[in-house]
Structure formats: structure tokens, C-alpha cells
Image (tube, rainbow, N blue to C red; front, side):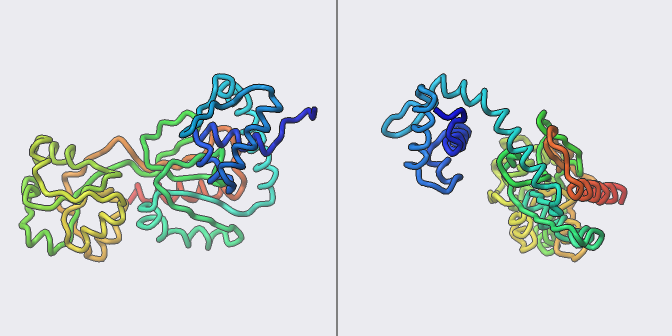
Length: 299
């Protein structure tokens, strides 16, 4: 018997354990669920133990399977880290992922500055709201909107979370929105990724949760879409001032109550793994982005 277990089987096993599904593992590995099952069976035969119990509708890891995954997991991560570091020594690219609203409303207007300052760097920007898995996804560094608590990551606060009320000037005038309590007549655009209306209205309009629930609301699952809806006169949105500066400057939105800005327990953080050294180009990008955020904070 070979000293090493079948490597393709290890990949299939790791993905199946992590995703708790042969089908999802197959999708990630771009193979069929049947192929994943065959690779798992090959590994089981090599080990001489059952790693999953199989039924008609689902598969479940056995106790031996979970124990084996826990033991090989650190080694697999070391292989990934070492390989990426060697591969990246001559790599002049930076792969960054950030929330879509942050990318569209803040970063896109500043991106060219980095490329002008560092013209030999290839910048790859992705946008998604889901959390990045640095052990799996081809990402060097990321911006994440969360509470900043993750023991596996180096986290630096770029911009503290805040919630302020915005709408189109015409909507404000039409609805006669002069004070926070007037919002009982408005339509609240509830960005479900940043759903702070009960806290904001409780703090500044003295409304209870029951009162808030009687106000007309539209649920929207994308921050940029919620802001666009406000621009087009569909209601009032709570948004981070970071994301509305340009629309305010262009007269598309007005900040209804500048003194009433709620500080929330989330914020935009620059994150990367603690156990992975940053390549030179990634360090340049990190330092540049931190400088841009510091300039914003001083405005």
C-alpha cells in the first residue's frame, strides 16, 4: 500500500466534511456527486474505516470521520498556506473582496488612485456579503462588515458602523418630514443587512417596537438597492454615512436629521488571516487602504 492516502480523495473528503454534503462538495470541486462518493469510498478502503454513514436522503460523518477530519485539517491548511506563499513570491496581483455596497459606493471612486500610485500591481476586486473562507477562497485580504470579533483574523477598523436617515429631497418635502416622529407617515426602506430602524426610532422618536411595526415598510436585501430606492422617492432609508456622501453631494439624497446618527455595534473592518504573512503587493494595498480610511475619518 502507498504511504500517502489518495490525494483526490482527501480533497473530496475535506470538502464533504466542511460543507456537510456530497452534492455541495461536488459543486465546489466541479465534479458529480457520484464522483465525490467514489473518492470517499476509495479513502475509506485505504483507511479501513467508514467515514460517513449513508442513507437514501443524506450522508452523515461518523465519529471516526470527524476525528480524522480534525487531525488532518491543520496539515491541509499548512499545505495550502505554504503553496500560496511560494506561488505568490513573484505575484504582483492583489485579490480583495468587500461588501457590494462598500465596493460600489465608496471603493470604486478611490480604486484608480491605488493603480496610479502602483501601476505594476494587478488589482482584482470581488464583492459579496457572505463571509470569506481564506483557507478555501483565492483571496489575499478582505473588507468585512461585522463586529470585528474573529480570533483567526487580524482586524483593523476602517469605518465605524452608523445609521442615519436619508431620502430624496422631493420625498422629504412631500411628506413633511421635519422631525423624527414624522416618520410614522413615511415608508421605511428596511435594509435587512443593516436593520436598525427599531433602535433608531426608539432612540430618536421615542417609538416602541410595537409602534415601529405599524409603520409601512419595504424589506430590501441589498444595501445599494435600498439607497437607490430612496433616491427614487420610494421612502426613507437608514444607511451608513460612508455610503451616501456622493449622493448627498449630487443632491440625490438629503440627510434628514443630522444630529440623530445611531452608532451600531458593527463596522467595516480590513481583515486577513493571522497565520499568513502578507505578500509585498498586498501590504502596499493594505497600507494604502488604511491611509484612505484615515483621511476619511479626519474630514
